Image 1 (cartoon, rainbow over the protein chains, first blue to last red):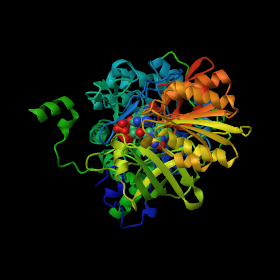
Image 2: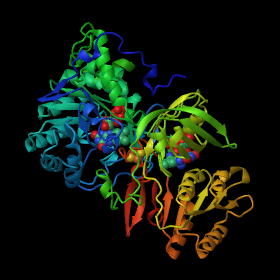
Image 3: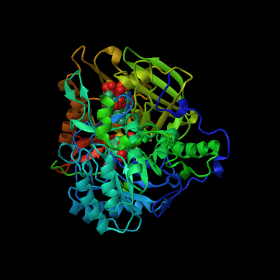
Image 4: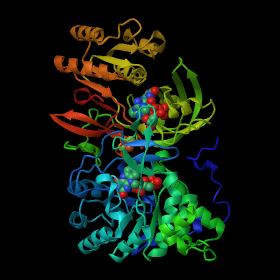
Length: 340
Length: 289
Ligand SMILES: Cc1cc2nc3c(=O)[nH]c(=O)nc-3n(C[C@H](O)[C@H](O)[C@H](O)COP(=O)(O)OP(=O)(O)OC[C@H]3O[C@@H](n4cnc5c(N)ncnc54)[C@H](O)[C@@H]3O)c2cc1C
Ligand SMILES: Cc1cc2nc3c(=O)[nH]c(=O)nc-3n(C[C@H](O)[C@H](O)[C@H](O)COP(=O)(O)O)c2cc1C
Ligand code: FES
């Protein structure tokens, strides 16, 4: 039985060349990462330290913190859906003051850059929060403007270009730290949202968050999540977010960090070919806690076999110039073409 | 939500763990080899793995997150949490006793002797035994008895006397009687099939233990109803206790916050992660489902 969770079924990516000679470093704006692999917010914390040496990762990304104390959603907060999962954790948060006093100091023991993920209910609150994060130890701010289950009915800033532009512009004025903006796939026009974030001053985009979804227990007739709806993550998300990474990379000139269903180096390579400069690994860490390490090693092995000197050379190396791609920038046109 | 929250995300020193004295071995994701895997009855299986350290260093009450194999019908995606049933560090052995209930445990049940599987652990905070305790009472039901068996052995190894009240539906589903018997525990078996598992009868047994001075501490696992009973008696008789709780898990490492349960702490309701702040908690603070 092939088990999609393990990398044993993935064809060996290495096998030729000297992986140690490959330059794994990537650049995200002014920041140079030792490799392009980092955790996705909410799927990583201090508890992984005994299992994964944090010094090997490209960056460390914290669970989204909110300015205020929050309790999170009712249980059950997760459920399995085929080869993937839904979550409606919400953003339980001890607040920014606690985060700055306790969480940031913990990570100062590592040389790996710390990316602090933040969310807030308004543009002003986002800006105030971002200001508070200007402390030693925080290398990057990742603005989670895409969390689908934090606002009513899954509505979030990242659903539309206008609120995205407003909130990013407010944050941009509030900080000199690198500002990564995490987009949501729950939008009809990801390229326009990406452009809005880039024009408003984002230094990079994370593409992206979970897709709002739902699952029902047919025995009990009840929703399987306490919050009724939740975000889909894991392998099922990958083709959709690879597509969005591709669209965003064509729409903006700032770096893109791909995220969604990455469990192996092969998955990460797909995102990089589509235009990502780095990747985030989320749910795969639950299934295989050392997944990020396999991705790091696999990327170098793949480049060695292909005779590619730098992992960064994979970014946007897709061969698509001979293909008609313009229509793909317009979701709606493309969709109607596809179904007609 | 209108509730006070407590989310330990940083140093363990501010975790309100009842067993702060028990320093758990740091977890690792290791490959175990199945050396035995047998049915104990229609529902329960006993899985014995040979696994490298730190797995065999697990303590009573700790658990592992097991990667369950896929079968033609069942494709569990996430791992499944299982309590330590027995650890033998000298021989590099860890054992689990589990009930086959759904996708994950059916997958787990398919693994053959000689095959390998991944296990992440040891995880969580295990049971603690007060050095002053001379005798304890463990009360478990169904598969919850599996979690209490290593606790009884730990107690016996420290010269602490054990009374074990084992609750089950039928004689065939009483687990681990031999384990409790081997350490010289006083054993009380209570069954649904003859009505003796009725809470009123269990209460009578618990009160007798207390009256005879055999209950310096209470421990329970596997039943909401029995937990509430023991909690009520513990409060009334001023007997401290611990309970091993369950909640659905994903990471097992305190990262995802899916496994929270509510606790009653000095009049406030606090949400705690079962995987990292438990799964063993103070009995008086636990709340039912
Ligand atoms: C710390 C801990 C220790 C445990 N120790 C044991 C043990 O020693 N022996 C044993 O038989 N069982 C134990 N359990 C319960 C065991 O994890 C579940 O029975 C198992 O996850 C069921 O999975 P399934 O896919 O077969 O069932 P399904 O019902 O198909 O599971 C669906 C989902 O619900 C979750 N789930 C279902 N029941 C439980 C439960 N009781 N607790 C947590 N999650 C659940 C599953 O993980 C899965 O995500 C323990 C649970 C926890 C939290
Ligand atoms: C349990 C869980 C919690 C998450 N919490 C957050 C969060 O707090 N902030 C955030 O920006 N994304 C959060 N995410 C989304 C992930 O960061 C990631 O974008 C998404 O899961 C897709 O990646 P994956 O398929 O690799 O998991 C969470 C995902 C999961 C599964
Ligand atoms: S299972 Fe992830 S925090 Fe407990």
